[in-house]
Amino acid sequence: MRELHARLKQLFPLGELTEQRPNLAFVTVPAEFLRPALLHLRDREGFTHLVLLTAVDWIEDGQFQLTYLLSNRTQACDIGLRVMIPRDGATMESIHEVWPTAATYQRELREMFGIDFPGSPRVNDEFILEGWVDVPPYRRDFDTKKFAEENFSQRPGRVTTDPATHMKEKLYPGGA
Image (tube, rainbow, N blue to C red):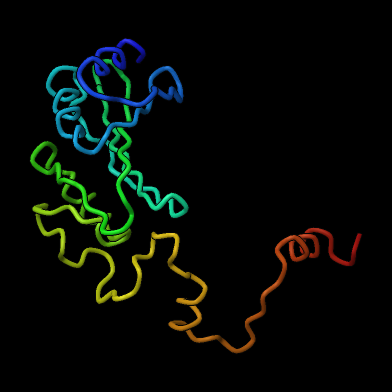
């Protein structure tokens, strides 16, 4: 992976390489260099499979981290390209022409995080959350407890217990 990183660094302004294990590494790339880096990896380095596209909400930093995980099946190795984008008005260039399966990931990220991918097929169509009007639920400022209290009625007889105490009582009835 270090050789690949060295080759890529000659072409693109990359961050440091983070090796998770010998066949998996991650590197940060500026958003404007994502497409050329992806095309280079696909066309010249053998990373022909987009494994996934996911996001992390770094609310404290006002950013989203997009991670594009690519696989080189011949070499049995994977590389993740991390891209940081502003959280406010989050927008990223679509890569559906590079890997058509990216359109599905982009639709999910649009709906669950509110990240826009202009030009991606059906990106604005409802995907999982029909009729959703609240803050996208994977954003860290989405209040799950408040949403549940407002949308799900309390059932009579429902009791909340401390998990540690409950398990102790189940495992050791009578305090034995």
